[in-house]
Length: 191
Length: 351
Image (cartoon, rainbow over all chains, first blue to last red; front, side, top):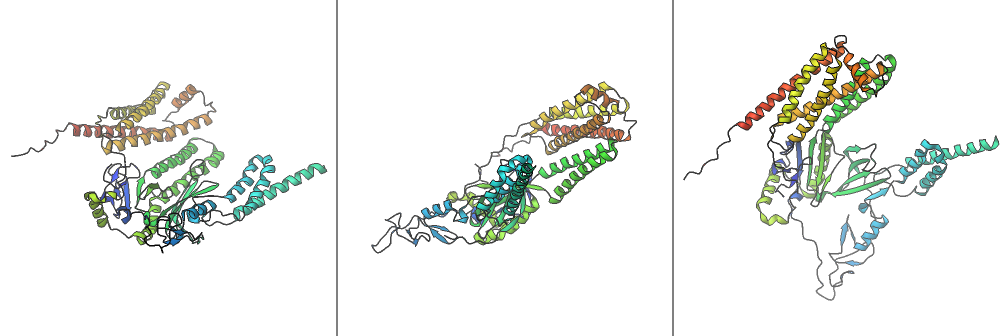
């Protein structure tokens, strides 16, 4: 391990302090590829000690729900339980207890904790469009695409704002496929 | 538990993978009020990573040659289509097929050139280093950094070059700061091995031979000469691969290294042109592609003295091989003389 705090993304050679925050690109000592490094104060800061929660000194002080011997500092904004400094999780100005945080993440209520979302609109479009390559499959896939589009119309989609146009395309395409099937069946039966 | 929805700001740069099945199909970066949001689209799902401004320690990017290589490939493909169209007398049909193809490759080349040089970008926090694939162009990375800088500065302050260097120096000198972010774990520099450059010399001599034989090929149409040239080119490719492997982590100068990569590029171009010429022969003489001997015979029958384009191509190839061979030998000579120079005597301690 060298004393270099950063490494070249290409060759992993350590980049010394002369590279930091210079306006121009400087050749990496390892691969000679021009590199640009921008560092911020966090690189040199010592991490602050984690809060452990103060012990209760007098009988009139409220105690933490999870640690009865620790002093409560804030109530959970979701369930109202008293929390010590150790149990208090601050997120976007909200104070939550670990249980509510976990439940919020599981139920998808906390947008800032979500690390994945299913794109039902893309699924619906794919289910309506891909089977056109092997058209007999449309008989099964078109109703499924319709079901997904209608069932998940109001489900949270991507975190990046996007319109409902994919759902609409899926519904129109699947409906047309079903209409074509109906027309075909009627034509065969009336022949 | 409520979440306020605030508008996201798109950062420049995007990476798209049309046929990405395992990895993300596309990645993009967005700015939120207190963090950077990394969005990876995986066709039917989206994954998110958040980098809070207060936690970002450094942003690094390094220029890569990917764009340049892509330019060469696209240029070669467009040139190949144009040469094939010139060589083959397919008339309107050939032009209708090869013209749009060449135009398509040229368009891609133009887009790639306009996008500017490529780079590899990373973001470092106290606990990990994250690759940012969407910032794969220097221009996009610079623009994104410019947008990120004030946000990060608002969260944790800003450092000038001098301040950053002083802080790094202090961190190195002061053992009390050992609890601070740990230095980056990186691969120790590999030991440099001495390389005589025998295979490099071999490549140079083979190039000189190639130059001579190509020159002869202009005047003599002989199947054995064509066969010898094919074998020579195979030997050249083999020697080049070995030379490129041996020059890795060696004391060979940058000039010789670049020279070897240049020869590789030249040989690849020759291979592409040869391939195009073979297709032309197959189509023109309605030949079956699996009859190698017939193909070789046809190759040798093409008289350079009767075709100005072939004459021009062979002369240029001969001259380029000669230039490469001689310049490579000169570079190697300089390297060997440098190696023979007496080492500088270590200063002796005077009493």
